[in-house]
Length: 264
Length: 319
Image 1 (cartoon, rainbow over the protein chains, first blue to last red):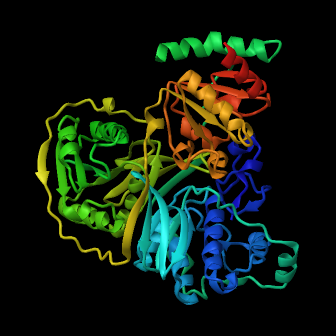
Image 2: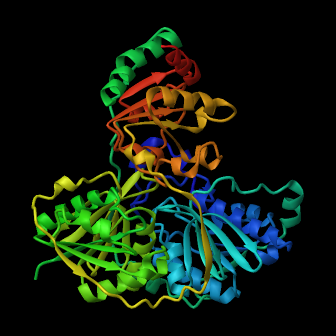
Image 3: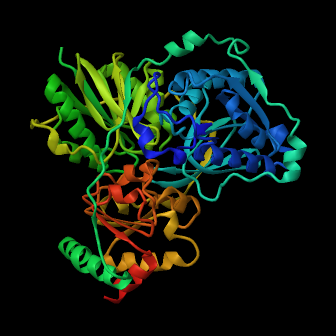
């Protein structure tokens, strides 16, 4: 769960609290776009198996109870939900996040596919899924755009530096979902929401997972400085005109024609 | 002892990718002030073309690992190779060059070396004899500096920010072959097939037309494509545009897509959210067309036109 950064008032990016965090606490908590795609892909994998999603898909978040509203909505899609209690201590510590997720996976049983969103949008490390794969000793496929089960194999389509390819893989694998098309997260119906309203989010503490908070904090070896804002904007020259025709003429004659001719 | 900087290049194609030249420029900045030695590690199934190109680069040493097992890109095999090279060559700083492969291998490589990678660095330098890196956070709205003390330091660099000309020395690199013993078990991979080969037309384009969500949908892509053709531009899109399938994945520009640096970048129907601007910050000239006079895009543009783009483009098509 991440703050909805589209809600942030531009000036607030330069307004920090005593913990050196931007003052954006008023924003809603949302699922980040990559996690949304990952969840939808997981649901489609479950659909293709013709089983209840709840038996098949487990959603894990590391957050405080502010995320419960969103988790409740996710649960109406028929999935099992686990929240590890944390007030944001580890959001910039991918090693700690991976260690927590690894423990949850080990405690919760076996999975055929472990899906992650590519990055969270706050500290943009993009490392948690990769490190979790390393900790679990599992193969990892990044930039996943689609996955489907075929005859016991996970057929995974992903972007690479050399193009888009499909891999036929034997589970279990870690899949890191990047930019994917047409995998917008489905919306639960009112009926589904009502059916799931009494479902409980399973909440784990670090103690329950046999993890020590201080040891987890120490896993980040980087020495961070303060967050800072840097204005890198440009000086805009506006094309004037009484109507679209005049503006178009000015744009073409004063800017585009010369620039494009010069390029040619 | 002289500090050792290694630039790792995963050769998923035969040539040295364009982004590598920026990484060499970045390594040059660090090497100049620390009197460091720069090596490039070439890993691939066939390094011959890249070797020929690397000889002309401003680096001290080329170490290449050419092996049948590296003919197909399997990250676990490349990781194995990188770790074995690290164990033998002991670099102080490892910079992974490239895009997707660099991102994934660098993080896993760092984990196997017992350190933590810092990705997407936009500035590098030394402070108190420590490597200091600047990285964008909060969807590139803010920045943070990190200092790294553990060795090897492992980083990736945001493309388009450095150029190879920043190195101030010229040296003829020595060439060394490296042999490795593949250990990774890849029995999990039962088969693979290419869906489509990528063509990196955006990185080379002089003029790029960026379509935002406000410009797409319905039949409006046809006008945008026609306009792009008239002005000789390559067409690209923001994340929502690509996500909705209006343009292919390769056309995505922004924080999670391509970072481009064309001569002219025309942005239509995009509000100007920071993640998009991250992808075009290297553009020499940004021209924005938007009907909302308060759209943040105008703060990032050199030239702005407030108006309805369909009317504007239709008029330009007549000129």
